[in-house]
Length: 134
Image (cartoon, rainbow, N blue to C red; front, side):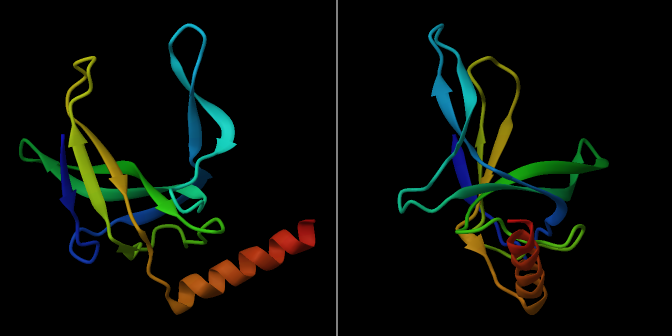
């Protein structure tokens, strides 16, 4: 298992618009793991979110678009415009081979998302919509 720091200004990751709470994984009675309905939190108690992104990748000389989830702590659901680059802070990717022999997998995480005027505006709009719905 290897972890690599990634510069999000050089490896452009674009938001797909899909953002979900990161679930807490629980052990079932038969020894299997499954996601629960509870939202996971980091060591400081901050809620964790899965931000779906897409990026260009090249494998065996063939270019393709890949989607991945980036695990990000945030007090509220991040408001990101779809198909715009996401300026992650402290972005890293963990590359590993699962025990079931299913090839190489990636696990992405970030320390946060850099604030921008556009992102702040979208977040304020989303919070206003949530208040109206309550």
